[in-house]
Image (cartoon, rainbow, N blue to C red; front, side):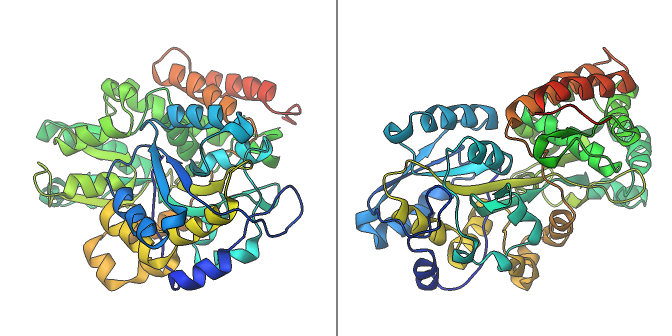
Length: 425
């Protein structure tokens, strides 16, 4: 789970528009309720949220926000949020910074309030991010941070070899096999430990090959396809042939980022925050890092759309204040802070065209292209079960315990049991 920033109008305008913007149940109406708030989020890896919330607390003394940082791990954060939400009115979280793929689950369970689209400037956001905040045709959250996977590479090494960064899987394999060993490096790594990051990497491989995993809000299983076999085969082949190091089966975001930053990898799939970290002063690879869109079988691939959405607890104590806080956090002033201080991608399209920001964050054009063409993780009210199935099955394929074709068939069977009606395949 990685958080972002955006751009917009004045804070005053946002506060007016968003005041009492929460709805209860299926009826759209204004809800009263102001007072102090608790904002729950995954661990703030870049440490920007404290100063952002200080600005709110200075100007809203009667609506002070207490930040509750949950574990860095998305799985652990989700577990703690769910435990609190199930307590109903006795819960302690008013506003939740949720991973984009939890929106469907939380909405389907009735844990978060639906929101009226007209209350927020959604037209100013990058179009794909709005879809991550909807479920069953309704808005249940407001996009706060977007994200898309990028391919980070050692531009100094590719320049010495006189080759461009890879655009296809074949390019990536060839360079990982031939150039990386010349410099004592491993070829390529993503996030291949059995956790949510593996689900993301698998979905990107399947999507890039032209396939899907689920359809119809999780009711239909679509993964048993040639595209899925190609995508899973790509990942499994990398481990088998060694251009993906076996150690990558233990990598999450931080482990893979550290391997690249320490100068042990030629190529790495990760979120943009890893570019900022690897390029920072003191990094062994500072000034040597490039970033492009993820490769696919025949050209640029498809990233999974990451990031987070801001949602209001269905039993929150002060929904009116919660709405105003969301407006503040998605304002231009704050979203610039999130980008410049948090190194996280904005949801507002205009920031990607800002010359000053592009000069400071040269990956922004590639990131915008990645976000525009990105796809969400499989939507399902049973997403946790879906993700666990993907992790278990594909992990076996990558570890060499099962052939990719057999793994895809098994994946389809097990997802059928999770989905609400049988697959049409």
